[in-house]
Structure formats: C-alpha cells, structure tokens
Image (tube, rainbow, N blue to C red; front, side, top):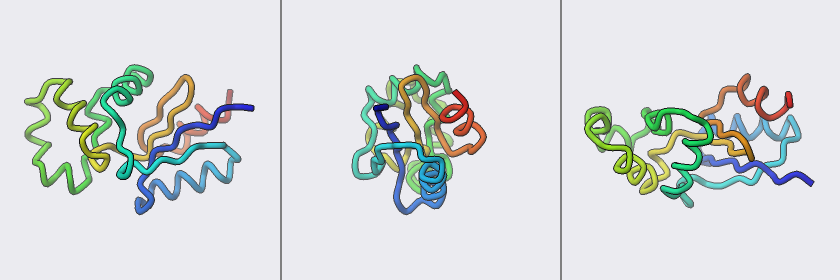
Length: 122
C-alpha cells in the first residue's frame, strides 16, 4: 500500500477546498494537515524547498493578511534565508497553500495541470 501524500491546507481557503475536491475526485490518498494549527517546521520547509527547487519566496503567501500586516513585501529582500525560513515556520498563515508533499516532489499552490502531471501520469 502506498503512503498517502501530505496535504497541507487551511480549511477556510477556497483554493485548498478546490484542491482537496480534486484529490478526492482523482482517488489520490492524502493525509490532510491544517497549516494554521500545525504549521511547517523550519526543517520541513528546508527539506521541501530542497526537493522542489523553488526559490524561498515562492513559499510565502503574498496575498495573505499576515504577509501584508508584517510589511514583508519590503522586509523580505533584506532578510537572509535562515531568517525567512524561521519566519515561515513561525506562522502557517505566511505559507502559500495548499502544499502537496510526495516521496519525490513538493507542489506549492494549486496548479491543476502540474498536480495532474506529478500525481497521476507516472
């Protein structure tokens, strides 16, 4: 039996709900995790970034209230990677969602075509 994918989401997020419905419709087993209740650790963020190769900035929820309230648009460019990772690990609402973590991939944000390519067409 395959290990379910890790699905980090915020239950009130419409994009997360859309992604969850997509996963259910495709019959893809996943372990949901509320990103606000159990935010990613610094170690998880570093591992996921390493696995997906995305720039750290792509992990930030730039449209969220936490991002805006902290003035991160101006502050992020002045922060080093360690500071950015610690910031992401401090508040799940700063993290872009949903995130789908598999054994050999990490998908940040819901792009149906990309999710299809990485989870189904193997």
